[in-house]
Image (cartoon, rainbow, N blue to C red; front, side, top):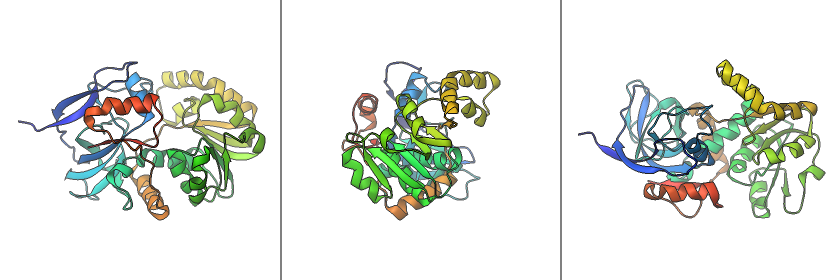
Length: 337
């Protein structure tokens, strides 16, 4: 008899945000994988995109699909070729795009995607750090190729993304400007922001100009405003607005997808071009080596991700999904296993 575990799954793409909790076999591991007993998994807006099939052009899944993109847990088994990790190690990860499945009691994960958990974090906190940490790291280093001494503005940077992006940007020698709510002002300045704008009282379009880089967390409605404040030759990176030709090329998508994405992203590319700005879109990937760097930044700055006060169980996964889809969580929503 194969041992069973609980997993939150979908059997097809659907507009209805709903998962089913099933008993499925604990996964077998390949030589390059580790078996992780999941202690905590974070629920992200990305889950909604996966469930509705919105990302199927980037990554199409087979069903039944176990949901969940990031987790923290403890290694129970290591594959033959894995040398850096051992049974009993505490790890955290953003799971490889092709093989997600954090909302389960166990996960088989490629060892190249994991990193030792930051020592200052609990499992619940660590589960909330990998995805935003990697998004900030890849965004600043790879997409913006940000240079020391230049300026970066993060509109809506008072949430969990800014919490990771600000110290990473500071460590790279950037001048960091953030806009957000008044409650997060002090906290954001403490972790290294040079300037903080309270969006309820100040409009960044009137106050900022000649910024080198903007990391957009708000989406298409802010696109025109963001372009106005970027200096010619600058870059605008969006986590939300939508993919474009460059994104498809960088990901080596087949020609028909490249064609499709250049059509989809054309209006943003054209607007950006008029301002002599380069538009980039990011879809974060797993990377254990980068996570190790992020671990150092988390430990050095004692960054503790904000967690929504109610922890969910796998049994109420749908309440957790609902909260992320429609509610106003006060931090990362976590399924505590």
